[in-house]
Image (tube, rainbow, N blue to C red; front, side):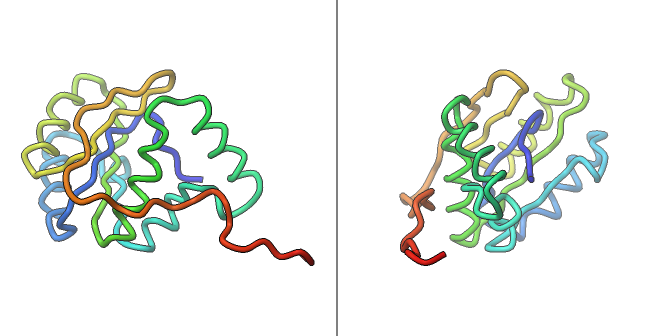
Amino acid sequence: MFSLVNRLVGVVDDPDRMPRICEHLLGLGVVEADIDVLIGRDGAVRLDSTGGTGWWHRMVRVSQYLLADQSTDYLMYDAALRDGRAVVAVHIRDRPLKPTATAILEEEGAHLMSFFGRIQTEQISAWRGEELVLPSFVPDRVDPNP
């Protein structure tokens, strides 16, 4: 299951900007394995914001929504991906890199940025743009004969 813990995460409206953003982050000293780029529907499936890939994932996501601040951002990231945008998640292993990595994302137009720590989440910037249709935890239809 894709986790945002210890990651700086933001929405990038133009996925074509991602190679440039990654180049800047690599130049900062972030290793390639610590940069996750999610794009479009494939990215939304990988994020699995509602835990739709199985009952255990669903329980984890429901727990996160109930216990974590900024947990609704997962749904916003999902909606942004399904709207054709990109989400970048940078695993920050060295805390002194965080302010510069944040500045790089801000300069490239990222928004709905947060840093998801182990215990708390820091909101860095709000959503910019039109309101999106958010995914639901409740299935559209329940099969009476599973």
